[in-house]
Figure 1 (cartoon, helix red, strand yellow):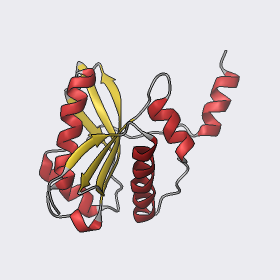
Figure 2 (figure 1 turned 30 degrees about the vertical axis):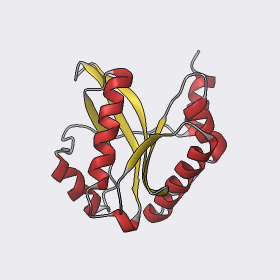
Figure 3 (figure 1 turned 60 degrees about the vertical axis):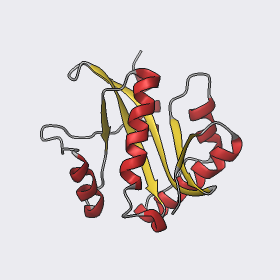
Figure 4 (figure 1 turned 90 degrees about the vertical axis):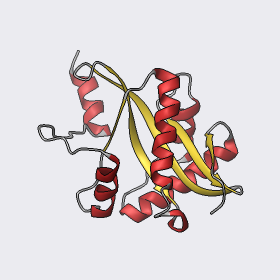
Amino acid sequence: MGKIEFRPVESADDLDLLDEALRALSVELGDEHLADKGALRGGIFGPVPSAYGLLALSGGKLMGAALFSPVFSTARGAAGVYVSDLWIAEAARGRKLGAGVLAEVAKRTGLLWGAKWMTLAVYAHSTASRRFYTRLGFEAQKNATTMRLSRDAMQRLMRNVQ
């Protein structure tokens, strides 16, 4: 692995690379992958972006990628960044590229929206990922439960609450 170039997702070609990385991540995690390129395009290039992408390339070859979004916490008193996806190519693992991608996300989001903290979710079965994040200083939240409202439930909520 040579010198790493970090590049934000800004073009259709970049979007193709991000899609490739996110699909590989879904396969590795055993996740259903519902985000087609149209959904990614809308999230990243829409009138109000809901996500940002970052690519890590070496000699033009995709080595890593991240998808992330802004968040704000009154408890933390500042803007932050939620990293929804982090993928590192098998050939680049164990070479500190994951930490490098997260550091680059932190730098860029600090400039973009003043992010002061970072959050992410880790699957319980992904013990290697948990060890990696713990080594970087991430801490499990002791008094918080992640809750999700599905697409169908969100539609019902919007129809039923007026």
